[in-house]
Picture 1 (cartoon, one colour):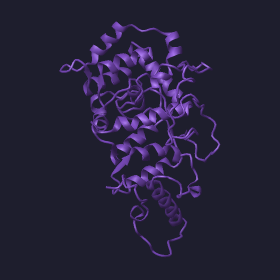
Picture 2 (cartoon, rainbow, N blue to C red):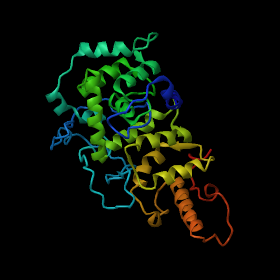
Picture 3 (tube, rainbow, N blue to C red):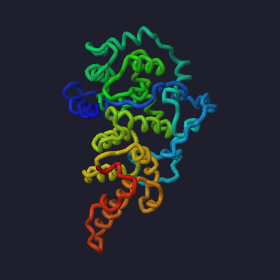
Picture 4 (tube, rainbow, N blue to C red):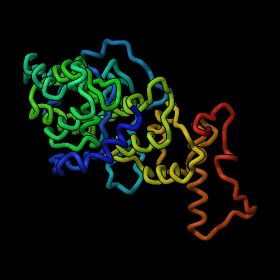
Length: 336
Protein backbone atom coordinates (compact mmCIF):
# COMPACT_ATOMS: atom_id res chain seq x y z
CA UNK A 1 0.00 0.00 0.00
CA UNK A 2 3.01 2.28 -0.01
CA UNK A 3 2.09 3.64 -3.43
CA UNK A 4 -1.39 4.72 -2.38
CA UNK A 5 -0.28 8.24 -1.62
CA UNK A 6 1.19 8.57 -5.10
CA UNK A 7 -1.97 7.11 -6.61
CA UNK A 8 -4.11 9.68 -4.86
CA UNK A 9 -1.77 12.50 -5.79
CA UNK A 10 -1.84 11.59 -9.45
CA UNK A 11 -5.55 10.82 -9.66
CA UNK A 12 -7.02 13.48 -7.41
CA UNK A 13 -7.26 16.17 -10.07
CA UNK A 14 -8.82 13.76 -12.57
CA UNK A 15 -11.36 12.08 -10.31
CA UNK A 16 -12.40 14.92 -8.04
CA UNK A 17 -13.59 18.44 -8.76
CA UNK A 18 -11.32 21.20 -7.52
CA UNK A 19 -12.66 22.56 -4.27
CA UNK A 20 -11.65 25.42 -2.10
CA UNK A 21 -11.23 24.19 1.39
CA UNK A 22 -12.15 26.67 4.16
CA UNK A 23 -9.12 25.45 6.05
CA UNK A 24 -6.30 26.87 3.96
CA UNK A 25 -3.02 24.96 3.83
CA UNK A 26 -4.31 21.45 4.39
CA UNK A 27 -2.62 19.85 1.44
CA UNK A 28 -1.39 16.31 1.13
CA UNK A 29 -2.11 12.59 1.69
CA UNK A 30 -4.64 9.89 2.29
CA UNK A 31 -2.99 8.36 5.29
CA UNK A 32 -3.67 7.82 8.93
CA UNK A 33 -2.16 8.03 12.34
CA UNK A 34 -2.10 5.70 15.26
CA UNK A 35 -4.92 7.35 17.16
CA UNK A 36 -7.70 4.93 17.65
CA UNK A 37 -9.36 7.17 20.18
CA UNK A 38 -8.60 10.56 18.70
CA UNK A 39 -11.28 12.31 20.65
CA UNK A 40 -11.36 10.94 24.16
CA UNK A 41 -9.77 12.98 26.82
CA UNK A 42 -8.99 16.51 25.88
CA UNK A 43 -11.54 19.16 25.11
CA UNK A 44 -12.00 19.72 21.41
CA UNK A 45 -13.82 22.95 22.05
CA UNK A 46 -11.44 25.71 20.90
CA UNK A 47 -12.71 27.89 23.74
CA UNK A 48 -11.98 25.38 26.44
CA UNK A 49 -9.28 26.52 28.84
CA UNK A 50 -8.74 23.36 30.82
CA UNK A 51 -7.51 20.00 29.62
CA UNK A 52 -8.93 16.85 31.01
CA UNK A 53 -6.68 15.47 33.70
CA UNK A 54 -7.79 11.87 33.60
CA UNK A 55 -4.41 10.69 32.37
CA UNK A 56 -2.38 12.34 35.09
CA UNK A 57 -2.48 9.14 37.09
CA UNK A 58 -1.66 6.88 34.16
CA UNK A 59 1.85 5.48 33.79
CA UNK A 60 3.77 7.63 31.34
CA UNK A 61 5.84 6.20 28.57
CA UNK A 62 9.04 8.12 27.89
CA UNK A 63 10.23 8.45 24.32
CA UNK A 64 13.86 9.45 24.21
CA UNK A 65 13.53 10.15 20.52
CA UNK A 66 11.02 12.93 21.04
CA UNK A 67 11.83 15.68 23.50
CA UNK A 68 9.17 17.74 25.23
CA UNK A 69 10.42 20.99 23.76
CA UNK A 70 8.50 22.59 20.96
CA UNK A 71 10.02 21.68 17.60
CA UNK A 72 7.85 23.65 15.22
CA UNK A 73 7.31 27.23 14.18
CA UNK A 74 4.85 28.86 11.78
CA UNK A 75 5.69 28.39 8.12
CA UNK A 76 6.16 32.11 7.46
CA UNK A 77 8.65 32.63 10.24
CA UNK A 78 12.19 33.06 8.97
CA UNK A 79 14.27 33.56 12.08
CA UNK A 80 15.25 30.91 14.55
CA UNK A 81 13.66 31.37 17.96
CA UNK A 82 15.18 28.90 20.37
CA UNK A 83 12.87 30.01 23.16
CA UNK A 84 9.62 29.28 21.39
CA UNK A 85 6.75 29.15 23.85
CA UNK A 86 3.88 29.55 21.43
CA UNK A 87 2.86 25.91 21.74
CA UNK A 88 1.07 24.65 24.81
CA UNK A 89 2.36 21.33 26.01
CA UNK A 90 0.22 18.43 27.13
CA UNK A 91 2.28 17.46 30.12
CA UNK A 92 0.21 14.34 30.57
CA UNK A 93 1.45 12.90 27.27
CA UNK A 94 5.21 13.25 27.63
CA UNK A 95 5.73 12.43 23.99
CA UNK A 96 3.56 9.34 23.89
CA UNK A 97 0.07 8.43 24.99
CA UNK A 98 -2.16 5.37 24.81
CA UNK A 99 -3.74 6.69 21.60
CA UNK A 100 -4.65 10.10 20.35
CA UNK A 101 -8.27 9.27 20.60
CA UNK A 102 -7.69 9.14 24.34
CA UNK A 103 -7.17 12.87 24.22
CA UNK A 104 -10.33 14.53 23.08
CA UNK A 105 -13.44 12.86 24.37
CA UNK A 106 -14.78 14.42 27.53
CA UNK A 107 -15.77 17.84 26.21
CA UNK A 108 -16.93 16.42 22.92
CA UNK A 109 -19.05 13.88 24.72
CA UNK A 110 -20.68 16.66 26.68
CA UNK A 111 -21.40 18.69 23.57
CA UNK A 112 -22.70 16.03 21.19
CA UNK A 113 -23.94 12.47 21.21
CA UNK A 114 -23.99 10.34 18.11
CA UNK A 115 -26.24 7.66 16.71
CA UNK A 116 -24.73 4.24 16.13
CA UNK A 117 -27.31 3.64 13.40
CA UNK A 118 -26.25 6.83 11.65
CA UNK A 119 -22.64 5.67 11.75
CA UNK A 120 -23.55 2.32 10.19
CA UNK A 121 -25.54 4.08 7.46
CA UNK A 122 -22.65 6.43 6.81
CA UNK A 123 -20.24 3.51 6.52
CA UNK A 124 -22.59 1.76 4.08
CA UNK A 125 -22.45 4.80 1.78
CA UNK A 126 -18.71 4.39 1.25
CA UNK A 127 -18.02 0.67 1.78
CA UNK A 128 -16.49 -1.35 -1.00
CA UNK A 129 -19.01 -3.40 -3.01
CA UNK A 130 -16.69 -6.41 -2.95
CA UNK A 131 -15.73 -6.17 0.71
CA UNK A 132 -18.51 -5.00 2.98
CA UNK A 133 -16.17 -4.57 5.95
CA UNK A 134 -13.84 -2.10 4.21
CA UNK A 135 -13.80 1.36 2.74
CA UNK A 136 -11.15 1.22 0.04
CA UNK A 137 -9.67 3.70 -2.43
CA UNK A 138 -12.86 4.50 -4.35
CA UNK A 139 -14.89 4.92 -1.17
CA UNK A 140 -12.22 7.11 0.41
CA UNK A 141 -12.17 9.33 -2.67
CA UNK A 142 -15.97 9.74 -2.45
CA UNK A 143 -15.73 10.46 1.27
CA UNK A 144 -13.07 13.09 0.66
CA UNK A 145 -15.17 14.64 -2.08
CA UNK A 146 -18.18 14.87 0.26
CA UNK A 147 -15.95 16.41 2.94
CA UNK A 148 -14.76 18.93 0.34
CA UNK A 149 -11.13 17.82 0.68
CA UNK A 150 -8.73 16.28 -1.79
CA UNK A 151 -7.57 12.77 -0.78
CA UNK A 152 -3.96 13.98 -0.45
CA UNK A 153 -4.71 16.85 1.95
CA UNK A 154 -3.41 17.17 5.48
CA UNK A 155 -6.95 16.96 6.87
CA UNK A 156 -7.33 13.43 5.51
CA UNK A 157 -4.12 12.37 7.24
CA UNK A 158 -5.65 13.79 10.43
CA UNK A 159 -8.85 11.86 9.77
CA UNK A 160 -6.93 8.62 9.35
CA UNK A 161 -5.08 9.37 12.58
CA UNK A 162 -8.33 10.00 14.43
CA UNK A 163 -9.76 6.74 13.10
CA UNK A 164 -6.56 4.94 14.07
CA UNK A 165 -6.37 3.50 10.57
CA UNK A 166 -3.87 0.67 10.37
CA UNK A 167 -3.12 0.87 6.66
CA UNK A 168 -3.04 3.43 3.88
CA UNK A 169 -6.07 3.88 1.65
CA UNK A 170 -8.24 1.63 3.78
CA UNK A 171 -10.66 2.13 6.65
CA UNK A 172 -12.08 -0.98 8.24
CA UNK A 173 -15.67 -0.94 9.46
CA UNK A 174 -14.48 -1.06 13.07
CA UNK A 175 -11.98 1.76 12.57
CA UNK A 176 -14.55 3.94 10.83
CA UNK A 177 -17.46 3.44 13.22
CA UNK A 178 -15.47 3.39 16.46
CA UNK A 179 -13.30 6.31 15.37
CA UNK A 180 -16.23 8.52 14.40
CA UNK A 181 -18.05 7.57 17.59
CA UNK A 182 -15.10 8.78 19.62
CA UNK A 183 -14.94 11.92 17.48
CA UNK A 184 -18.64 12.45 18.24
CA UNK A 185 -19.40 12.91 14.57
CA UNK A 186 -22.05 10.98 12.65
CA UNK A 187 -22.60 13.32 9.70
CA UNK A 188 -20.33 14.70 7.00
CA UNK A 189 -20.75 18.22 8.39
CA UNK A 190 -19.74 17.13 11.88
CA UNK A 191 -16.73 15.15 10.63
CA UNK A 192 -15.47 18.23 8.83
CA UNK A 193 -16.06 20.38 11.91
CA UNK A 194 -14.10 17.95 14.10
CA UNK A 195 -11.24 17.87 11.60
CA UNK A 196 -11.04 21.66 11.53
CA UNK A 197 -11.03 21.78 15.33
CA UNK A 198 -8.37 19.09 15.57
CA UNK A 199 -6.14 20.84 13.06
CA UNK A 200 -6.31 24.02 15.15
CA UNK A 201 -5.35 21.99 18.22
CA UNK A 202 -2.42 20.46 16.37
CA UNK A 203 -1.14 23.96 15.57
CA UNK A 204 -1.21 24.88 19.24
CA UNK A 205 -0.11 21.72 21.01
CA UNK A 206 3.31 20.25 20.32
CA UNK A 207 2.66 17.05 22.28
CA UNK A 208 -0.47 16.36 20.29
CA UNK A 209 1.45 16.98 17.07
CA UNK A 210 4.07 14.44 18.15
CA UNK A 211 1.37 11.77 18.24
CA UNK A 212 0.35 12.59 14.69
CA UNK A 213 4.00 12.69 13.61
CA UNK A 214 4.79 9.27 15.09
CA UNK A 215 1.64 7.78 13.59
CA UNK A 216 2.59 9.06 10.14
CA UNK A 217 5.73 6.91 10.05
CA UNK A 218 3.87 3.74 10.96
CA UNK A 219 1.05 4.55 8.59
CA UNK A 220 3.44 4.92 5.67
CA UNK A 221 5.15 1.57 6.13
CA UNK A 222 4.71 -1.18 3.58
CA UNK A 223 3.30 -4.41 5.07
CA UNK A 224 5.99 -6.30 6.99
CA UNK A 225 8.50 -3.47 6.53
CA UNK A 226 10.25 -1.54 9.30
CA UNK A 227 11.73 1.34 7.31
CA UNK A 228 10.31 3.86 4.85
CA UNK A 229 11.59 4.24 1.34
CA UNK A 230 13.19 7.64 0.84
CA UNK A 231 10.50 8.66 -1.65
CA UNK A 232 7.71 7.78 0.76
CA UNK A 233 9.50 9.47 3.69
CA UNK A 234 9.87 12.71 1.72
CA UNK A 235 6.19 12.65 0.73
CA UNK A 236 5.14 12.03 4.33
CA UNK A 237 7.45 14.73 5.71
CA UNK A 238 5.96 17.23 3.29
CA UNK A 239 2.48 16.08 4.26
CA UNK A 240 2.80 16.09 8.03
CA UNK A 241 4.50 19.51 7.99
CA UNK A 242 1.87 21.03 5.71
CA UNK A 243 0.35 23.36 8.29
CA UNK A 244 3.52 24.22 10.19
CA UNK A 245 7.06 23.76 9.05
CA UNK A 246 10.32 23.51 11.03
CA UNK A 247 13.37 25.64 10.31
CA UNK A 248 15.53 24.54 7.38
CA UNK A 249 12.86 22.08 6.27
CA UNK A 250 13.19 22.97 2.59
CA UNK A 251 16.99 22.58 2.94
CA UNK A 252 16.49 19.14 4.46
CA UNK A 253 14.23 17.99 1.63
CA UNK A 254 16.63 19.43 -0.94
CA UNK A 255 19.52 17.52 0.68
CA UNK A 256 17.63 14.23 0.59
CA UNK A 257 16.56 14.67 -3.02
CA UNK A 258 20.12 15.40 -4.11
CA UNK A 259 21.48 12.19 -2.56
CA UNK A 260 19.80 9.25 -4.29
CA UNK A 261 22.14 6.86 -2.50
CA UNK A 262 20.02 7.42 0.60
CA UNK A 263 17.50 4.65 0.15
CA UNK A 264 15.69 4.16 3.43
CA UNK A 265 14.60 6.13 6.50
CA UNK A 266 14.41 4.08 9.74
CA UNK A 267 12.12 4.89 12.63
CA UNK A 268 14.85 6.40 14.82
CA UNK A 269 15.85 8.85 12.11
CA UNK A 270 12.21 9.81 11.50
CA UNK A 271 11.47 10.33 15.18
CA UNK A 272 14.70 12.17 15.99
CA UNK A 273 14.19 14.60 13.13
CA UNK A 274 11.59 16.31 15.31
CA UNK A 275 14.28 16.85 17.97
CA UNK A 276 16.81 17.87 15.36
CA UNK A 277 14.55 20.67 14.14
CA UNK A 278 14.88 22.34 17.52
CA UNK A 279 18.53 23.05 16.75
CA UNK A 280 17.84 25.81 14.29
CA UNK A 281 21.43 27.06 14.07
CA UNK A 282 23.42 24.31 12.36
CA UNK A 283 26.62 26.06 13.49
CA UNK A 284 25.82 24.91 17.03
CA UNK A 285 25.24 21.31 15.98
CA UNK A 286 27.29 18.82 17.99
CA UNK A 287 28.12 15.76 15.92
CA UNK A 288 29.53 13.98 19.00
CA UNK A 289 26.01 13.57 20.33
CA UNK A 290 23.95 10.49 19.49
CA UNK A 291 22.39 11.84 16.31
CA UNK A 292 21.84 9.61 13.28
CA UNK A 293 24.71 10.02 10.83
CA UNK A 294 22.30 11.38 8.24
CA UNK A 295 21.99 14.55 10.32
CA UNK A 296 25.79 14.86 10.46
CA UNK A 297 25.86 14.63 6.68
CA UNK A 298 23.12 17.23 6.31
CA UNK A 299 24.84 19.73 8.60
CA UNK A 300 28.16 19.29 6.82
CA UNK A 301 26.43 19.62 3.46
CA UNK A 302 24.79 22.88 4.54
CA UNK A 303 28.04 24.29 5.92
CA UNK A 304 29.90 23.46 2.71
CA UNK A 305 27.11 24.94 0.64
CA UNK A 306 27.26 28.14 2.67
CA UNK A 307 31.01 28.33 2.08
CA UNK A 308 30.53 27.87 -1.65
CA UNK A 309 27.91 30.59 -1.76
CA UNK A 310 30.30 32.93 0.03
CA UNK A 311 33.08 32.15 -2.48
CA UNK A 312 35.20 30.07 -0.10
CA UNK A 313 36.27 26.66 -1.39
CA UNK A 314 37.61 23.58 0.32
CA UNK A 315 41.41 23.93 0.32
CA UNK A 316 42.06 20.20 0.13
CA UNK A 317 39.82 19.84 -2.92
CA UNK A 318 37.98 17.06 -1.18
CA UNK A 319 34.96 16.38 -3.36
CA UNK A 320 34.01 13.10 -1.77
CA UNK A 321 30.32 12.62 -1.22
CA UNK A 322 29.49 13.39 2.39
CA UNK A 323 27.60 10.17 2.78
CA UNK A 324 30.71 8.18 1.96
CA UNK A 325 32.87 9.96 4.51
CA UNK A 326 30.54 10.66 7.38
CA UNK A 327 28.85 7.43 8.41
CA UNK A 328 28.83 6.33 12.00
CA UNK A 329 29.49 2.71 12.81
CA UNK A 330 26.30 0.78 13.35
CA UNK A 331 24.08 3.43 11.70
CA UNK A 332 23.84 2.33 8.09
CA UNK A 333 20.08 1.92 7.80
CA UNK A 334 19.64 4.97 5.58
CA UNK A 335 22.18 3.78 3.03
CA UNK A 336 21.59 0.61 1.05
